[in-house]
Image (cartoon, rainbow, N blue to C red; front, top):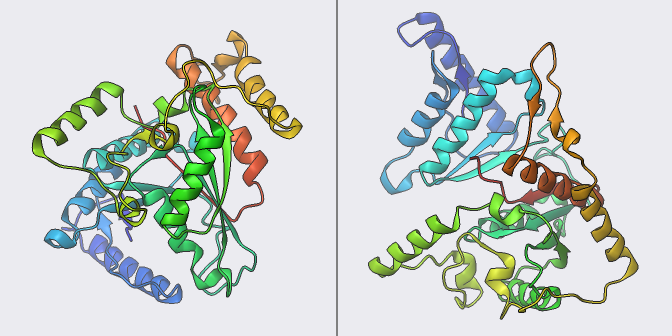
Length: 332
C-alpha cells in the first residue's frame, strides 16, 4: 500500500509526523480488511510518478521484490487537470517499462469489503491479448474469496475475436479446453471485435514483438506462464498474442462468415454502427472552462472508435457483474 504527501520533505518535522500517522492509519485499515502485508507511506515534494517509481524500485528485498503494482484509476479525468493527468500517464509508462505487471482498479467505493457477503457474485473476464496468465489467474483467485459466500463467484470469460479470419467455433472449443486443463470452471462466450483495432491497441508493435522473440530464441529462453504449465504446456510463446493467434489451429484465407443468431447479429450491427456512425465532426472534443478544442484524427480516431465499440459490449454483457477484468490498452 502506498500513501503520498505533496508538500515538503523529510527534513521537516511536520512531514515526518504526517508520514508516521498516515502509516498507522493505513495499518489499521489493513487490519480491518484482514489484509496481510507491509504498510509504507512515501512523501515527496516532486511529481507523483517519481514517488511511485521510487517505491516500486526500493520495495522488497532481492527476489522478494513485488512484481505487480496496483493503482487506482481516476474517475473524472477532467477534474485532474492537464498536468496531473500527464503525470499519471507518465507513472503508468514508467511502471510498464520496469517490466512490472500493472493493475488499474476502479470502483473501490462499490466493491465489497472483506467483512461483506455477496451471494451469487459474478466476475467477468474480457480476454483480448494473452498476457502470460495473470488475466485468468487473478479473477480465479478472487472468485474463491469468502466475500462471495460458500460457493464463490461465478466466472464468465469473453474471448474477443480480433480478425475476420478467425473461426469463432474453433476458438470457443480451444478456450474451453484450455480452461478445463487449467481446472478453471468458467463459461465461455466468443465476442467479435474484428472490425476494430483493439488488438493493436493492447500490445506492442509487431516489430518489437518479433525482435523480442528473436532475442529469446538466441538465449534459448521460453516464456511459459504458470497457467500454460497447468494447461499442459502445449502453448509455446503466447505473450502479446491475441486469443485467435494463440488458440486458432489455422486462419481462413478469406474472411470467415458463419450463420449467427438474431441476437448476435444485432450485437454485431450495434458494434459496427458504433464505428461507422461518427462523422468527422464527431471527432472534435470541445474543451471545458475556456480550454481550446481538440481535433482527433488518424490513429487517435481509430482508437476512439475501438473504445466506443468495446465499451458498448461491456455495458451490454457485463452491466450486472460485480467485477470486470480485461486487458489494458498500451499508453503510447
